[in-house]
Length: 196
Image (cartoon, rainbow, N blue to C red; front, top):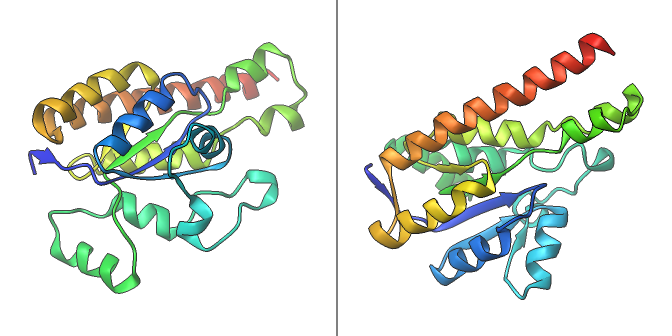
């Protein structure tokens, strides 16, 4: 599909710059918001209606927050090819809904490196669910728009305002930016662990 309508978004960010404006824009467009922990608390405090990931998955965050979004109710919604009727049928049969936007940025591992944390504390700053959602959304850019950094929010909002959805060209651009970001993140972690 060329223009992707935006009806449902998942937001889970460490860098909350511009997040409230983005979320307010989405709500004004009639988009359902789903979010995790601190991201959700911020948006609810701003008076926005946001479903928790736990409501979507029926499962609590566990292992001190290590497992939040790693669940089929999240990833099936991100990875479903909206041009494939069999994918949509599976979602319907399982009572799941697709996501149209995945807005995620990663735990600040660079800060852990700067703080010279010991290995046990530093590895807690390695994001797992975030890169997984980012990579899933980037892989499925034909059906999902991924927003990997606050600097792209204004371009995204302009896209939706201009087209009533998100163009394939913009989704492809976000896909490329996302894979570059996750590759750089992994490279930073590998470099840290190699010299630690």
